[in-house]
Image (tube, rainbow, N blue to C red; front, side, top):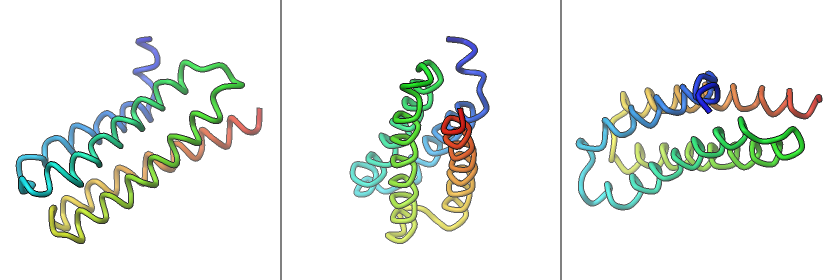
Length: 117
């Protein structure tokens, strides 16, 4: 299990959650228990899917990675929405979105390499 925690995409997603969690105190109570909570749960879903994929057989890996990709796209929309309703400022939005984009690129590469096998 320890090796699974060393994969770069897992570390990146883990760091995304820590960053996201750090912004929580700055979010209004109104937003914290709606869109913020939903976004936080989605990050945890992506983190869980990445860990599951890292421990799955080759045959099981692709569907798990594709689920993670869909969840990541949902997260993109939720983060954009948090910015648009002014729950977070542009600086925090850019920091989060940059991390999500990098995770997306890593996940896309993992999906492509899994399909090629």
